[in-house]
Amino acid sequence: RIDVRSAAQMHDAVLRALPADVYVGAAAVADLTPENIASSKNKKTAGQDALVLRLVRTPDILADVARDARRPRCVVGFAAETDDVAHYARGKLEKKNIDMIAANRVGVAGSGFESDDNALNVYWRENNDAVGERALGPAPKTTLADALMDLIEERLHA
Image (cartoon, rainbow, N blue to C red; front, side, top):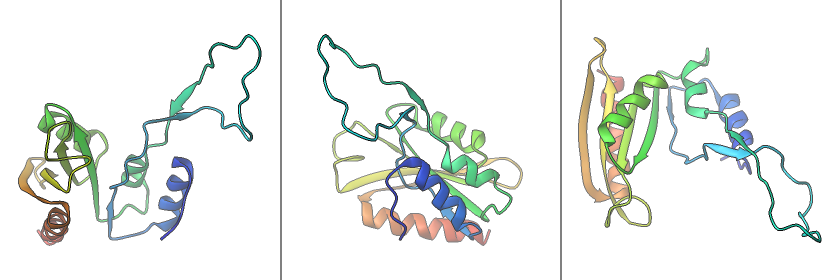
């Protein structure tokens, strides 16, 4: 385990850990991060009614792992989507040049965040650029994790 406090530290730690056989990018890292990090508390000042916070794009750990020269044999990402799950997951699979993506629908009762259960639609790239897919669940998240690891192992040997 490597403790980090920021997306930038996580990015550096992940790339330092390469090479690896498999990378599963399960961390939900923010897409945007503050441009400047204050070293001390931002105090209210007289006449200040608003604070402007500039955000910049966070480095894309998953995409950087996939394009690294020490790329793992299998790079797996996740996609939490509110609608059109298959479309967005397949797009992420191609755009980030990863091998597999586990997608779930969020914002529905009984699955996703704040629930012990979930369901996944897993997509992967085949040798001929076709996309394979398999539905996992609904089931407890621990059961889904085991099923996803079994699928990753199956795909590694395919």
